Length: 269
Length: 269
DNA sequence: CTAATAGTGTCTGTGAGACATTATCCT
DNA sequence: AGGATAATGTCTCACAGACACTATTAG
Image 1 (cartoon, rainbow over the protein chains, first blue to last red):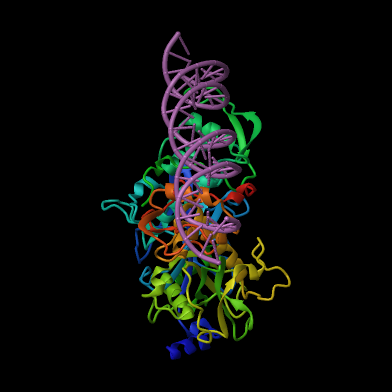
Image 2 (tube, protein in one colour):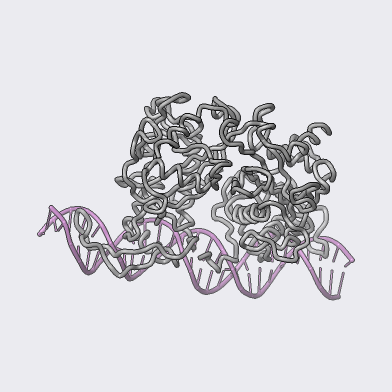
């Protein structure tokens, strides 16, 4: 017990290259709403391992030359994949750290520690394929056959590489949870939005329909969630109905009281 | 733009030692309750950088030889510092990932990415000093002068090394929040505990007194939070009062309805 | 006895959810 | 006109918090 202890302290002052070679990457779970359904940004791998399978956009952290902070690296990966500039359209994307995945063997080539980030984006253009991978696309979550255990149903055509099904599952659960007690649903919307649009976000992320009337009243009752612009939409709903009032995101950072998911009957045991 | 892209893909299949040297460590924010006050496990650094300052217990992840998963590494660091075996007393400690800190320059020696873990422990013996550091101790949170911004008040004697004040602040906020909607307060207690003991945990972590009667009724009303053993304590309270009934942790993993902190008047804006 | 503590009872205000209703607009 | 939709109103049940109260024990 004494020897390895001393050895560790001894090595602490040394270049890690003399110790254990570990690589650090950043992966991004970028979510958006398209056609009232939740989508995730995926790239198709062009080479082994997992060639032909889909993966979260990501890459190595620039460690020494052009050293960058982790959120910077995540924003850079997202910008490279979407073709958007971090100053422009991506500046309105919410980015937060999701978790770090480092099980030995998760990358067959070497020991890789991956820091995952979660991004909430309003509707963005299709990614430009071929920049960093064989293909890239916004993929509807439902097409991935994710199970509660972080695996994919057998028979799902779009297979996810590495442990990315696990990471994506964790990201989805985080997103579902964050909508309950933060105003981040507005990050999926344009700068000005209607209450029914905001409701569509909740329905897409939670995967269940909400009562329009109660949702409306509740959103307006939470202080700082949304603030009215005084304007309305130009037209009514697709199939009729009055024009909806427009709102901006308010200044609240926490929703109080929270908007709890209906499907909490089954209190996780 | 094309050249660095291709370069990165090219290097992806190579040993990271040829790319950018990055070290990965695990740090642990271990919390416990002592004398009705929240304490954190800290070690005093015996050598530069930050010699003489206090730090969270932690160390390098074993990457290739004896490759270990990240939670394993955290448990190992905790065991080394407390002198307890991971199979014995430490098996009842709750461990969860807190976040990853990787700003360039956070370690003056090299680029270090640190994965922080949060531990909730029942009362444990004093750490054995000298094993891994100049000193080690359970330190009351209040003695560290932490501010909301993750810094320490000027004049605080026990200074924290690296960005550990930030990490500790994040861990405390996570702990306060987790007590609201999970039954993890029981992780601070012995296997059998009383409702007043559980209340003492909440009061220590939240830093405010709770109404004994309402707390009691509320805990019992949450399904699966605690289950009665049928027994009571041998003696009443220190200064009188009836014997308290004993409870075990229940099977709930989420509290519903949640126990919200009183001090949410100031809804974070 | 006295003080402190465990545990229960009661009341009130708030909010969530079910449901109904009105007003507006598209086709 | 007819149907869909935005927004508001009403009712009921659950729960949080304030407060009062009883029972039990240490000193």
